[in-house]
Length: 131
Image (tube, rainbow, N blue to C red; front, side, top):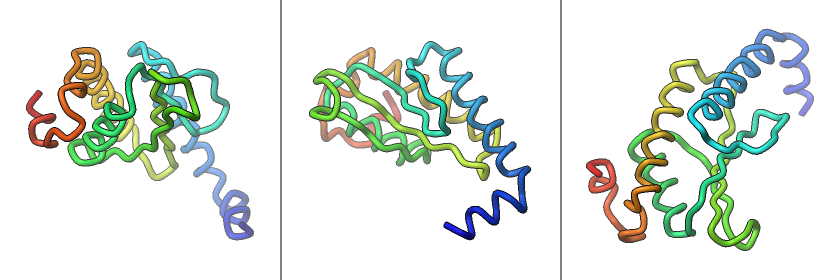
């Protein structure tokens, strides 16, 4: 914890870069019509409608196909039929990373809306990438 505080004091440009990345990510997701709720931190929730198997398939595809790690929040923490994908951008990310993330989320949202993830909770990632 002391090292983190020291880094914040000694390298204020990292904090500025972090918030630049956060604002680009959150603004870009909102511009694409994603519901990110109200957040005042770098943690960026993306709220979608779906089931636990769909959430599992989505996070697996994001990780395996797009190299994007996010955690999921599902029932019973939130109501059934909702999915929250939590992204945590850092100062190590770039604006190119943000653009790739927004593009990937646009693709998975289209697939979710089209029912691709409902077909099976155990479809192969190769099949998902082709869909």
